[in-house]
Length: 348
Length: 93
Picture 1: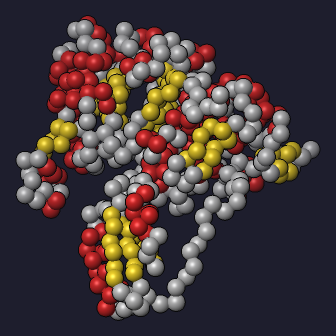
Picture 2: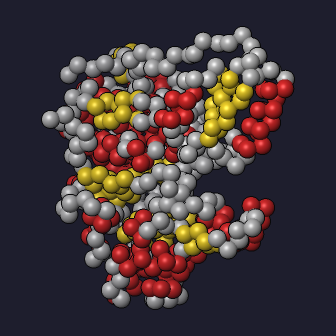
Picture 3: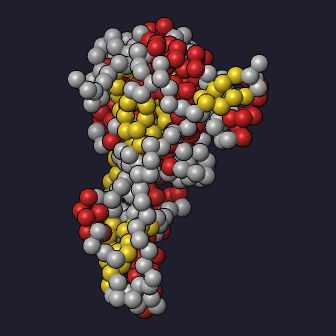
């Protein structure tokens, strides 16, 4: 393989840590030194050449090639078999509607959430059950970190450089979850969003930190969803009122109540679409009365349509918990779902 | 034994952007202000317009606002900007 990247010589793997840290090539955690053998193994697993074009970042017109993505994937601790998911996530992130530059540079401080569906989850040992949103396993941790490290090194999205986040959130270290498809009758998220059934897929979303909810005192789907809706409305009032893609994560205990009542994801999406709305006047209840002006009756919906809610089945078996994951900033960045192996603007 | 590692950063294939020629002063010049469109920009750019006209002698000031403050300007604004002597692309919040 012909590589383009500059080669540096370091004494050993430990010396490589300081070498990379001192150049701001890593995120504060150790890296796996990206040697030619490891990078080659990543590329061969994904059947990519070093100069294969993954996509072009639309705002800065920056081409992203497979070699560079593989280097960052190795550094993050990925195995070669993880690399196709990193490639797929980045291919999705480079689509115009995702607005990667805005999402990764904004003071709003979102992270790139990736949601994994399909048979690859089991092949890679991804576990969407215990601790689903907090480094549940090696593959989700490493893939999420690879996505972020590549932003560091390929788009200069380092704190204080392109990353202008006021606060950011811990998902910026790694923010990846596998859907728990085995323990639900619901359709996988990727299938709901148009990906072929049975295909592995990645959905990316410019996402705020998860906001945890709890309701262990009812089995009624409507009442459970009212708790989720209350959290969505709180996010709209306390953070951003603009509609966009919200995600909700529903673990098995709450999920069982929906499934017993024959509620599908589509039913949930429709309920939340109808209920999750606030008025401009509601801003006065949380210290934002200055911007209510004369439009206090104006209604704002959380979701442009019911299709814009991402319902994710994940979480450990016990506990009446759930999570709401708000969008970075309304509709400016839209979630993108892409099947693994899908080719965008490929040459014939 | 030493090891060889790859540079993980983006290697530019050459300068994509080039700075426009500088002007020596603003007297009589057409100055464009491209606002990102956030709420806080209105007062800021109004004050800047006044200052450009009164203190720096600009011939005229044209203010244009992007439709999406996180995305590049619209092609029509970019085309119009090519007719100005000076352009400021400003971020307000």
